Image (cartoon, rainbow, N blue to C red; front, side, top):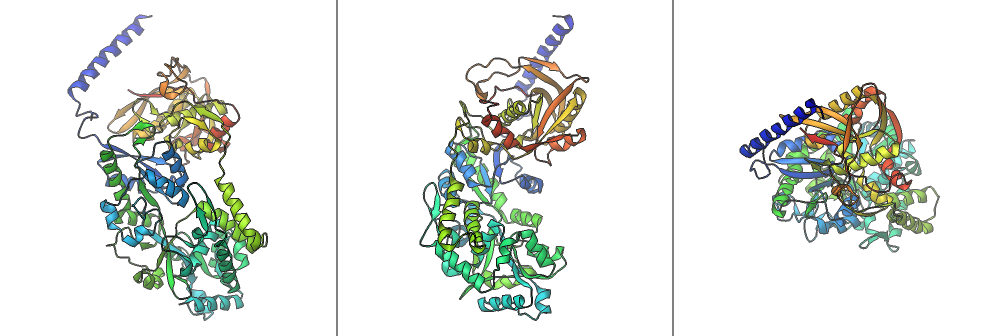
Length: 640
């Protein structure tokens, strides 16, 4: 060992003593775990990354300065969270759009009862009870509901002298009048099975809908683990569809049109009415410089407005985050309820609605009066009478029922065979993949840790690097949607854990790789944003809330594990490292959402896009036998 090396080690040891003394004398300045200034950590899992890119996440952070929020891009599926709950962990706060009633019933046992909270008390009782699974306790809080339904082109009604409908009979007469003039009455885009399902829900007469169940969900039988069709009720759905077509309300052509095609037909004046499923009646008219007016749905003796909550919110009652224990139940629940309360507040909901131009029909507060825009003025009587029907998207039901109704209309299946078709589609949707591709002996957390980073995301990067044969692999921390749980893993289990992000590969010199990683690190606004890297070790400096890459080295070999075969039993994970050399070329895999730094910064180096998503690479690595189990932990970063 040379003198320079010895001197450097002695100097480092002396610095460590100074740092240790500093920590001993100034714990409050450094915000120790026992400090009253330490922010409570709250995880919020959302349905997709649009919540982060829209500015809504930042708005919520600003409303919660006392909490440190870690955003997780999960999945728009209660199945996804039920899967996590069955493995003993859940994020603190969950936001989804899709509402599969079977999963909702199963998941509700793992959710905190919000019935005694101030935010639940602000809702009207009717709004809370309109959500299935809220009958005995309040487990699901709906966000503000936006308009869904039919808008008319006022110009065409005036041009052809057709009266704006005011009841079911005048609506049918209007449809007939436009048909006679060669104008399609209603463009609905029912080639999309989810739109088909929703349109049928909207038109269903009030006599067919119970207080807490929509029309088509009533024909679905549910037990603890599956959905099937009620043979005695399903014919009612077919009969009602047949009536709407016989009355000229819905045409066969509608089932061949996509929503985009339907929208274009409406804009071209070839359709008098349009089914809008995004709640944007006012902004739609302004955007296209046309006067549109919303219509309620008409039944035999009543009419109703149709509305969809922008999302559903819930709080975990599970005592773990990732695979590690949380703080006391009282602390966790208070923090989670506070954050969810801010998300569901009138101000936050109005902010969210404004971001997307959604017209509000139902508020999260009974004391918040609804001010209808001109485009929705015809719905005022429905609101005054409380005649607002809540629509809850249900992918499982819409795919099976919507496709079957479409096939009946197209003549691809007769009414007698429709029941068998929808049963078969439901069964296919719910069939579990039983083939075990791998088994993890220990669980791995997907949350950031000051000493190990995001270990689940690291494992995903390591496996992807092996699969694509790269020198290193860089992923966004959002690559891990949930923990990597111990036990046998099917393809479905594996897919739950990993985001559907694009993947690219670049060839970089040592200097380019250092420059690229420096930009990724500098872009991080919190430790939760730092890139996760396999094959490399990063030394990162923190100062005044910003991050700086001090050095990067290639991990040439990993040290032996102290026990077990998975991450949590591994040692520091780097027995030896080597400097990056400017004359060497390194193949680097990269995956993140397109707006995130990892991929956006790679654009300067001519990345080569890969087939499939990161989720596909991950699952195929185990399916094809390229990887047998989780790799040993690599010490990929340290705060210097």
